Length: 609
Image (cartoon, rainbow, N blue to C red):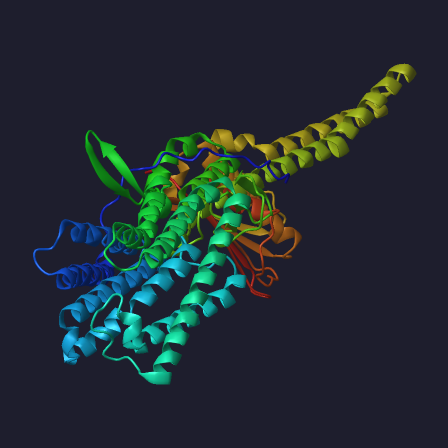
């Protein structure tokens, strides 16, 4: 069978948001909300402790800017819990919130170096972890929570070790390192050579983190210039955010911690730039299936932009009913491509026929079985495949598997019809046509020679034989007794001419009942093929045929006492073609046999009462 040309199917429109998450998502929501609450509470409490009451407006602005990070992390973690990116944002936000709480506590109670100050020092030292995660990992694994390539694994390990060294150095640094931000110093700080070593280790870790962050920035720029258009657009936001975050940190170091306006702007930029651009990229480019909607003067969020399986099939339903089987596969491939937002999707039949939606410009990233074939998907337009994508594709595999089965059945029926046409043509050419040619030649000879009674008798016998062969041929196509007398009479007539003992049992109700031509023809030719096989291959001495009608099914069973056979993979000729014919009518064909035990062929089709 010739493979159809690949076709592209327009993606269906994005549907409205589905109902809320299942009960299994509740613990995830609780954990994410708790982490966000810890971050916000730590920033509020730390800000109040640091400046005292009443809290100035600038401090509230700073707290609001810091709250962007846990808000974005909470949104992504709740909507896409299988994406590590949302959880990374929440962990980073907790480092920021707890660090702020630790600094505020040291400012308020650090003069005594008591237990409260000792407990606050480890919290305050979380700021290096916050900056390391923000500068390196948040831009590096945006937006799907994975490294761009395996080559970045050593860099990620170096960054992790550098963040650890920076945190450890800050935790144990002497009071001089803390004095610019915390007047009372570090209650856990080391003195002398040990303190100098701790400060040096912290400085080395901070420098390494900054250099890795610059390498990440360079990588983003290169990917933003060379990647696909969609990737370039979303990476522009992250490049802008990382430049602002690094610039804000440098601005803060240059201006110092003296409360200057430049220092305040630098801190706010360093803290809020990345989460702000992440939110902008998520909403602007529909990343993670989240976008902003506008209704009148109000803004609202729309989640789960991807269509569900039911919505995709509802959208495709009218078109699938009118389309040919292969065209159905093309439209279903387009539905897979639209639902998963992939560059291409292909449905492959068991015989290797492929129907492709989109431009197949690379290897398959995800493949799942679908009935007798499989579905293959190319890379996603944005990000990588996650558990939700695999769930959606697995759900679509069921209707696609049925469509593959339908397409395969249609192809086999077409092939069977073509084979039958060639058989009839061959029989006419080799049999009746040759007899008629000989008969015409005989008539011409008799006319030329004035043939006597003997030659005329021979020609008459040839004409009768040709007529008999034509009747046999017509009976093989559609016997007249089937059209006139029905299934029971046609089967009895067929079996009456067999050279072995044959018993035909018919339910009495069938003799006065007629069914559609398709149903009667399918069962008649099944019986005819089964008895022919019993004679030609099984060497049977007795054949039994039974026709019955019960439970909304019309059944035919043919059994013989022949030699039987080992039941293996069924062929596609003979009974295989009849099995396809039964399946097309909603019925089935069963064959049971064993060596020396005869063969039983059973066929059924659904009929109305």
